[in-house]
Length: 342
Image 1 (cartoon, one colour):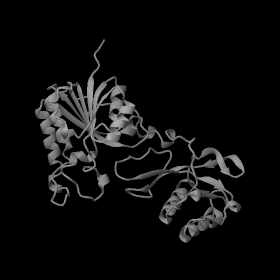
Image 2: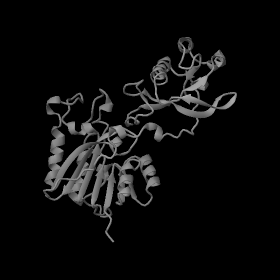
Image 3: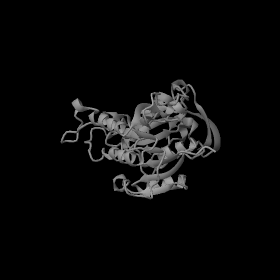
Image 4: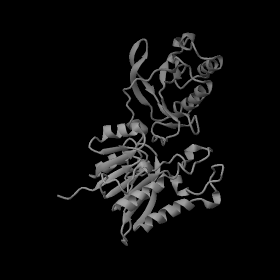
């Protein structure tokens, strides 16, 4: 029987990298993360893996005899101080230095393969000003040094940006993958072939559990801000009025009981970069980042005009109430029905 490759997963998070390795029949024997919640989640998903809850630089990889040799080293160094998701906030060199710790493991364990995953901007890793801003003229300088260091340990290195949607995931998440193979083979490092080119990307509605309840915004204890309501209105006009593929939704729509009704859900970002951005439910889910963001689904449902009373809007401020009334007066795709959301 062919021996399974053994791997370690550094910065393991909840275990996505490990899950992929297990699906490829790789035995992930070690997972490392400094965050207790991540380790608990990873242990729940991968009970047979040994877990170490510690900072990567606190592990004495050179002298810890309990850490076995491995065939594959997987690592996802901290990305938040590389990513554009930081917006214009200053970056910190110390936060960006965890990638160097990966090389300590490479030098000590000398795995046959190394796979490092990070944001695309990891390629731009370079010196910062005293204010924590990238020096444009030295863009990518440290990244190239890091690659040369990996090569100096005897590895052939290649890297590509891969989009998860191209391989069957229902999210358009692009990430940089760096693959290193020990030895000086002349053959190129193999890369996976795209299985789902863009016209065949999986839509978000395939992975949403539509059986979960979707409460109305009118029953919220804390009303939505007027700007949020306006953003929802823009999405409704964009996707409800013009969408070509509405969904048939079954549920308790009014006090009258269970009915069937046409509804066109759509995706909306309420908080984070580009708030108010909308996309159809037939698109992929956008990239979910570590920064504070709010991704939501807007689910329209139908109400007759004579069912809309002020009792539905007890806590909305005057501006929000006026906006709803304006929407009624404007008319909707179904005569005098009001399309609201949850």
